[in-house]
Image 1 (cartoon, rainbow, N blue to C red):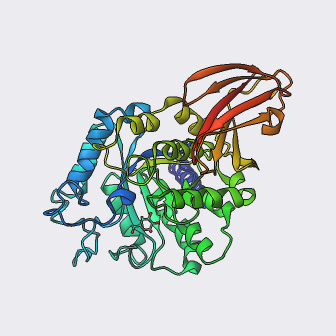
Image 2: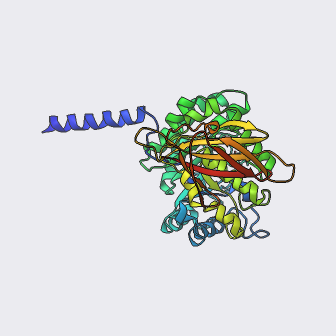
Length: 416
Ligand code: GLA
């Protein structure tokens, strides 16, 4: 009896050890995460007297959890409510060394907020930093990794964004996997978003994608997005230019992250908003909004809630798309998606991005073959933003599209 129990316990330990040894295997983020995060829009606004509806506070996150549901975002898949930087007291608790949420702005602690978010059917995300400090100067995790991972679990966190300010690049190579392991060891499933490759790219180093895939559910590849077309296009160009080394590594459970959606803020026009949403869907990017959900105009909300576009982003194959050609300043981006025919032919999402600003919409023909689509039986084509069926196209057929300046057209080619 004793012996059997010993063997059983021994086996259990081995299993646990094995689980730890293979790294992140948390079964999470099988589709690109969708949700809302504070940073791009609300930055580090901490003065709640002057800006009661905008400061990083319990109120902001409660309000956005409520709005995600009442405005219909939760229905189409937006799920995570993520606190970014500036939620902490400047010092840890003297006695326990635990992190302390700002006492004035989060007067009830984070469990009460987590409960509210969970009661709404949503999930709770939290920002921290691998280094000595967060980018905005609050305490980071580096000297308290185990304590902080456990504290996150105790606060019922479902998603952790771990930034990389105030840290050595060399420490990150082992430190990020280590923090992921500590999160796993708490037994609470938490999506793990790593910023480590963005810091490596900044320093001219090539990230180790195999390690990232093993240890992180998603990772920020590059610079922070800002509220302008210029910033958006720089990010799109970075992913286009470097796609050979980036694209193959995105997939279920491990995604490249080009950063937050700007839609609903100040910088992007209607056409530019469609452009970001379409290219994020092509890139299988996390769809994390950062806006004031009470102030999003109806036509922008319709883009954010476009089910056909979201379905491309969330396609179950999880294959990231690519920029395949540019002609007359019109870029063609293409992503293989479902349904796949019995003979193995993929369907495709195809976006035409105009880099033109010469005034009128620009009309341009491509053969279906030009788009990299070679199914001998052709494709049923649907305009995803106009929600219109365009009929059947064979591979030799000419396909015309007309794209607004700095805009996009977006189609689904369903293989027949
Ligand atoms: C870095 C990150 C941003 C944001 C800020 C917060 O710049 O890349 O996404 O989290 O820090 O300070």
